[in-house]
Image 1 (cartoon, helix red, strand yellow):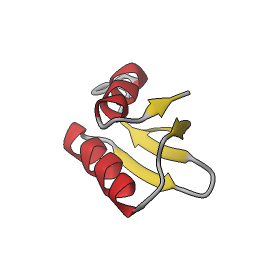
Image 2 (cartoon, one colour):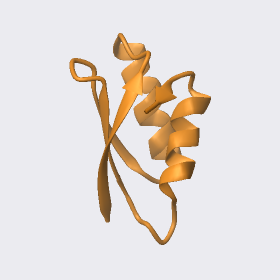
Image 3 (cartoon, helix red, strand yellow):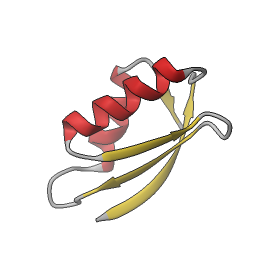
Length: 66
């Protein structure tokens, strides 16, 4: 499993947390949102997913990944 921390802009509430964490779970990754620091800690299998796909999935939820 690979672990990464992504900077994400636009998160402000529990709905944001649920949206991002839920989308990552559906993708097959584990995500933990930290609203205070505007970050998402992501764990994923590099044989199954790419970081580009993870960033795209977060972007599809309406957030900007730095």
